Length: 396
Image (cartoon, rainbow, N blue to C red; front, side, top):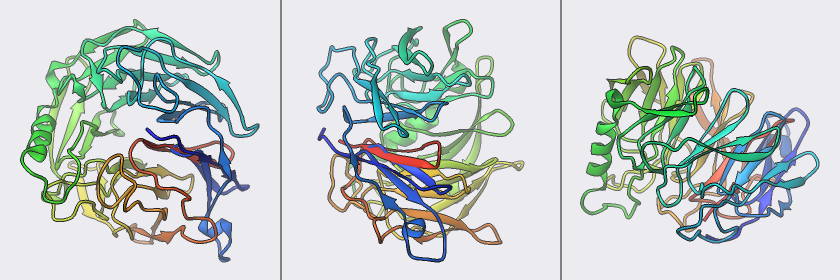
């Protein structure tokens, strides 16, 4: 894990992002002149107290970030401690908020309705759970999960309970957490066996393109009706009902048979509408993809459509929804390798909708400071900040 800088910026009513792999803010916007309000601009580097491997927004506009049991190096086994800090983008100040309960390196993350940040599992494939209080700025330990997890997707359900999904350690077993009783419940009716089988099939045998194995993270979204929609990264899609003992229903395949899109992104950009962007399949002809897929889950069955491609092929990138309803895609690489800055993509891209609703990715932030100043690939993060700020950081 290499130490990397952090940049930031803000500009009036424009959207800004915090890219947490290096400590930078990006200001974005659309106008007629070729200034920073059009092509974006990265701020000067912000000195971060640790490598911000993960981050979460807080209700007051600050963000909490953390690394692992080491500030700027890979953690050691047997250390249940995490370096953490809260950053105020207005004052530029940091508050130390270390987590003494567990090593939450690459843990599952979701936000509760009261602003608390819930994290599950992490380094050493552990069962521990912790919550960050955005008022007191402290971590507290919650009930352990029934199964250990690392590299798992987690999300907050419509009833403010938490769902921990397919992960290293737990495999296909899904659990639900209720903060009101501080208890985890296994959901045997919605085990993600198809995801486990598709991941195993994707990873079997030799890679055709030098790409990385698919690793656990599922694309999951809470749909308008309260169910959970599973959009990938493997080809099969599903509906999950996390109530009771859980239930699962097949929802077809993306585009009738798409490739795996490991380390790609899946973002709900409108009510019941999802964009799956880029990603890699180690058995595909090319390591990374520039493809964009629209999924509409508002009808009787999910509708999948090919959208306009990005200009660049990307894996290990980030995507964040802007206040305008556009999607900004930052970082990643072409060779689909983790811990590798070769073939990194320095140009961010922003989506555009035309009158027919087709998603375009032809608006590039590649001049006047829009270019990234350093490569970003695995374990990077992009978060939207309050007051039109955004930032980017992390990276191994």
